[in-house]
Amino acid sequence: MLRIVAFVCALQLGAFAAESGAQTPAGGRAAHATLAAGIRIASGAADAANPAFEASLDAAMRSSTRPRDWALAATASPQPSRTIGATAHVDGDLFRAAQAAPGDALVQWLVANHADPATPEGRAHRAAAIDAMTRIEPDNGAAWMQALAAAASDDDEPLVEDALTRMAQARRFDAHFVDVLHAWIDVYDRHPAPASLSTDGYDAGFVAAMAKAAATALPAYQRVVLACKPPATAGAAFARGTRCVAIGRTMLDSGTTLVARSIGFAILRNLDAATDADRAAKRDLDWYAANVLHGTGEDGNVRDALAHESDWRRMDDEIEVMKSALGRAGLPTQAPDGWMPRSKPGAVAAG
Image (cartoon, rainbow, N blue to C red; front, top):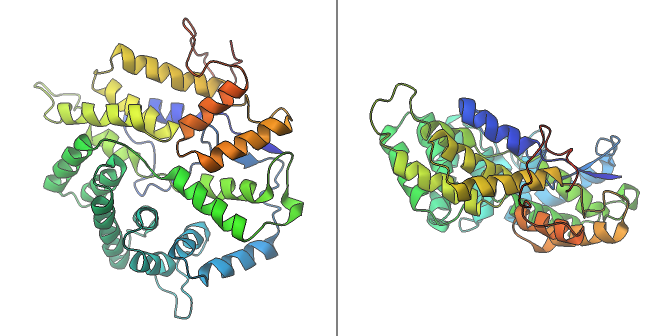
């Protein structure tokens, strides 16, 4: 049966970021495997998925006319270098998708987040994707975070400062996790998974889509955490302080995943800039983590399972999905007055 993964990752990620500023590998390859309302398949069912179906799906995606299919196939494959009709070269499916869909923010995001920075070709294509993203979504701080990560990798201090400025000016922060999920749902709607993969209350394709989306690499959040962490020996005002406070608050207030919001709070806490409103927002995140199983169908309630799947299909924000589940369970959508988390988020009962 499906399990809702208790959201320990974002809280631990944020806490670790506050201590060290290094919560994911430099390439941003850590996965969304423990997102709060992320679904995983219990009892090894994910590993037991029909390999023949997955192989045929991969072939269908790589031979389709949709650039998103090519990019998704590359990110889900253990061999992303494969290219149709030509000798394999580095990340071929990703790059042909980027070239075919220069105005598709999701395609460009996948290229920027998955291109191999260890090769000159990979770095060049990643740089082109980041440039495209920042043109398509100049108001999205996550796009500029990719620019920051690339500049930091190149030790280009002027570009680091420019990316921080652009992030501070951004009005929203969308790391495209839900967009990736919706894209995978579309794939499985067009290519139905075998009925043998069905689980209690959930459509088999939805299960598979969530598993693929949850395995998508996280962006390199550690770059902005490090850039916004004042030196321990700083004797004067932190020159980036004002911009970093703006960045942290945008992530905390408008991030579309709990990971992004938790990282935003960690940035503010590192700067000693968290307000009472910020701490209240963080307490809400803890409340969601403590009650992550409620209203999702995890208890065997098929109606809740169907409603939870519907929420993921129609909503664009993980936080809104969680609020809907809480409301369905008859629980407050914000932390009640006086409530405080226990030491193990995810295992705390409501109330």
